[in-house]
Image (tube, rainbow, N blue to C red; front, side, top):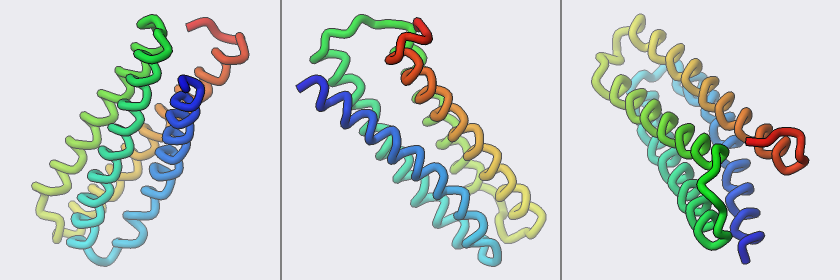
Length: 141
């Protein structure tokens, strides 16, 4: 049962990584329509939070059911989750409150969207690599 929960957690992380990669297309698809960029960003943020919450929930269930100790890797996963949620909420608030019809501000927000998405992909990829290395015994965290 615990192995199935961990597999679900792992699959959700990979789905999340694919979702983050697909998010790079939002500024491209809405390049000429600033208000559509705002709406797409809102939908993206809601899906982001839903998937991230599913990942956190399955991780918590796996930790409790598998009686895993509160290790450094679990603390690192929690910190990355919290940082990503905070950054995503702040990103959407900036997009929501900015006068997006101004072409300069729209271009600035698109650049911000790309940079934040790149940081989020990097954080998830680093955590996945660390957990693979931990499973193979190459790293002890």
